[in-house]
Length: 140
Image (cartoon, rainbow, N blue to C red; front, side, top):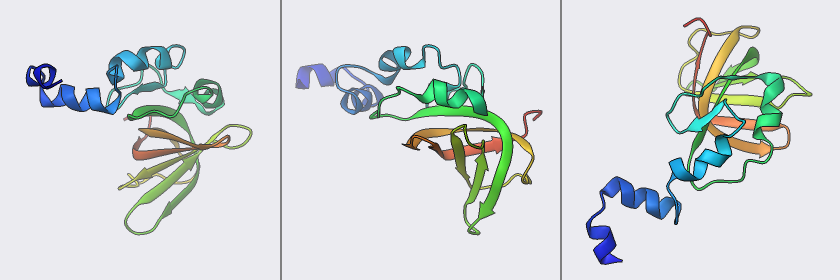
């Protein structure tokens, strides 16, 4: 093992240890098939999902040892802050509700159409958390 590690960069070693037997880019190829709103961490999605498409795209994604991102466009149903973080919620039942945890509101308000992008975590059948997350208006 030491001989193998000696020829690898630190980044390669970290990826190898995070997902033994594969790197995120190799392992995620199948995960992203038919899911254009998902991407590897910090990479742009091919196309953001509308609220109505998130459940179909998210169903069947296993828990992973590495971060993947989700991009969603929709209207805000809630905007709250604890004076440190902002919690932006979009999509309403029967669609999966999406909560974006971010450091800035960017001046958005309930009813505004936004695009959110961030680290995907499925909380339960009807809720997704994006943390960290960025939010902006689609025209920006």
